[in-house]
Length: 240
Image (cartoon, rainbow, N blue to C red; front, side):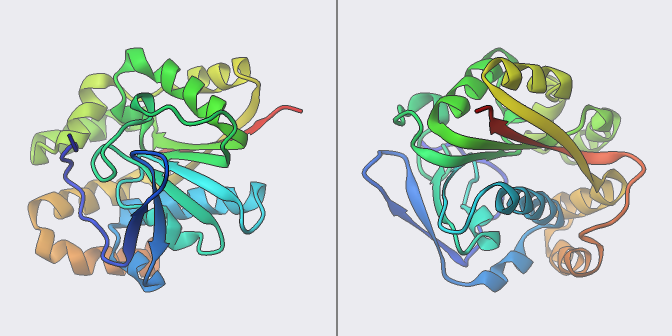
């Protein structure tokens, strides 16, 4: 059964089933569709794609875990992107048995905070099992907690509710777990919390007006400086 989440699918993408149940290959029909993303999705996918191009060459096979519509592919047109997501491909990471070392890179962008805390260690272990080389993670920083509460109060968004009620991942813990699994990792803070608060409220409370706002923010403020970071991008490479 597919999980319902409050995210708008991007029209410039198409999913094709693979031989693995619940895993689809992402085909990009229109690269310009990245401009139809919300500002917060755009900046985290852009950051993740930059990290991937730094650790993997063109043609690399990538598994996008929890990527919903596969929008990561809009930033990585020279790579082979497969997608696994309970909302769109019908299965979650811990429900699917993928062969060990099946992918050069595994990405889980804004996924870990939506996993119950008691299952997060198992998710990291599974990500480590199925990648040959690198793992790219992204999630909201714990420093955003008060802002997350404010946004939840205003919007009652189910994804933000999980941020607040399940607590956001603790980066020192994530890096320790990855080290125990044989990976070296670093955390890169990025994204403006101040921009996100207004943008996300508009997205939820006035979706029609948010369309033009998101396009403006993407075109003019995708690299906005921050005093408090919105996200931590975690880049992990398997130790030799």
